[in-house]
Image (cartoon, rainbow, N blue to C red; front, side, top):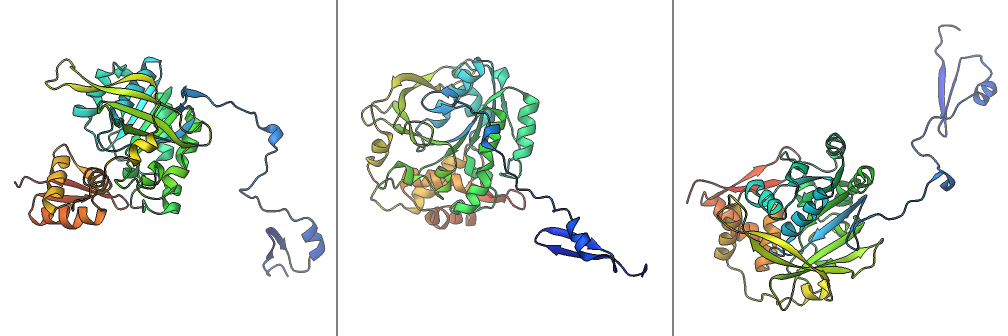
Length: 361
């Protein structure tokens, strides 16, 4: 009998192993259940925490929030001011910025806002979600004291996942909630709304509804309907703060030492009395058909400042011209590619497509 192998059976998650001739009941009684990844935690063991605000009523600590606004609404300028207040408060700021130039846009805005530049850092490598969340956590922990982490735009960092798929978007960005909580920082993902805002500001945010359902709050920026230099920023969705709470700020142009052109600066104006949803919804709709020449001119203008993702170009064309993503490719990018004026680049095996200009004129 010693040459006969033991027999292993599986009964509803219980491993039972016995040798031939061994009492089966005795083996079953001594069997140990397999370990499971699911556990039960009594709520009595959980310590309650109050919501901690970075800047009430807009920004929470230990939270992932979405910031959305049309092109030219001042998102980058506003974030530079928020970063300045964070860094001057003794905390570090970490940027993942794949559209704005660090030399022309990001650093000059921070300097204009009088940020503590020594506390502001940039990750230049492409970050892919959710794959790189653990590495992001490690980098932030090594830097220490990170109070603000900005991903601009967040849709550039979900790789080849479909930005219109609820499941794919949620799987990509949901870990940012846990990351923000573990780092005890405010994590902001920047996203674009589309040109069609007839169904409201929230519904206009491009892509899957998971973009607005997953973050702790959605904050949007709109241009004032009377003064084009004034902006309104407001919570339009969230389960921890009162929707509709908002503030106003003005966009000024200031000189920065060493630069030839003035830089934009966000100047706080206090509480807002206007609805961002109404401001965005009531913007005049463009009814004229967009020509290929208009699209190509816009694309070349955007690419003149550096490489851009397809998602960014779609959002910019939708916001500025009311063009669909199909039009952007068919009458904008493809004719320019055939003419040798632009080229696409695939960002790795799972990454998205990025476009850049060539030397051809």
